[in-house]
Image (cartoon, rainbow, N blue to C red; front, side, top):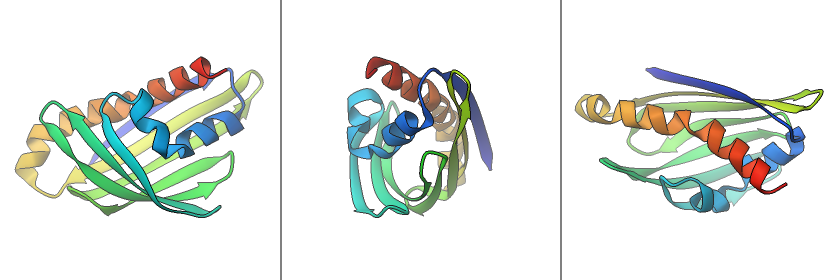
Length: 141
């Protein structure tokens, strides 16, 4: 299973980043690879959402169940999609000047040939997420 970890410091409160992470319907506005995003269900504790991905040869969609800990974390678990496994964790840690944002994603494609072809592209896409959310937070100040 492939693992990608990224982190950043941002001069925004954790509540701001938490709100951006959970504003799934807005992802196509600032994530160039996100072709569509929809929320299947939403409660204060959980969001089930589907994202469409289109970046070169990488095309498709997947659905995750996101367990929410307000202003602290979002834990993602695969519901459906082209993955054998997909799990992720956003951690938001308050620091003096704002917050530290950490993202860890682990994934493996169902089809091993697909994995060989698309894993590097998906890893790069996941790697760009923290930068995209930090840029979005700064743009919406």
